[in-house]
Length: 366
Image 1 (cartoon, rainbow, N blue to C red):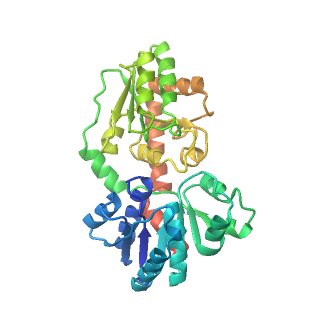
Image 2: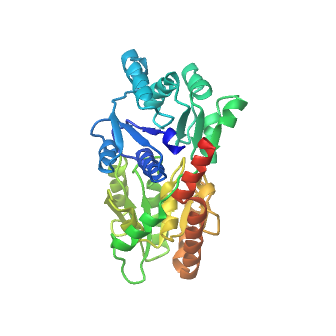
Image 3: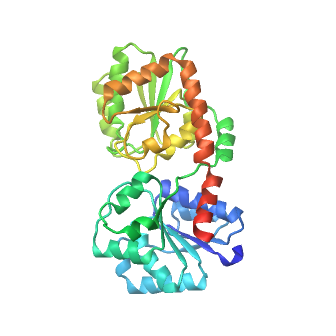
């Protein structure tokens, strides 16, 4: 009986990011399937406000990195889980995991699910070992690379068995509806080829490599624009690099872009220059928009991009090869169309949200 399986999405992160988007999407999808759903969030955080807008049952808790040492807060969480009769709880953020997972276990919650989205190693200390091996009941990794990083420092076969890879999914119905409704954020000039990158402006995302790529493309006298959407710590440095390389008319920093669909609609090719990714969700969005993708052949990228079918995978930091492959796509519209169509099909078959939810449902409840 679904009525006996109440699902809690526990996320007190104060900002809005990929993890919070994922929690909200999962909450809404399970709600559509008639599971009782509730949300725990920080009061007035973006996740809290969006959950209120969606009329989800919600409770407010404020969690910090040291909250797991607060006995009173711990007991309040135990009481909440019991009173709300939670059957399954999903947790992602480390501060939440350290207090909510033990509280859920003490309250008798059957499924304590750790949604892991970071492809970085976990320290093998006593707290983490206890959380992963004795407290959480299920671990869902968003890629094989993330799974590898979870178990990397733990010589524990039982932990390895506990980790299941389930990719993130995209709601293609909503994406397609928005894609049709949105106007391109940039109108390209005649014969111009438009490359685009979207993400936080950080060293991890590697947008500075796009400046080097742009220099190579300019040397080849290619008529192009590179659009970069996002904000972050590297913004001022990127502006400096664009200025000193005299690429102001070739590389445009768009800042925060509200509608990813309007951004994708402006592009001919999506490019990702990240140094590592847990799961490059923006790649799936590009494939949903029928855009070929060019990215470094690192971490989880090969799990999403089918090399030479939906795009190109480039040896890490090989700027010359990256530029060459972009030139090939710029000059071959038929290849761009082919890669785009293949990418859309791959998104439909492997990364569609409703299919991902069914996979999670089968994993936890059957």
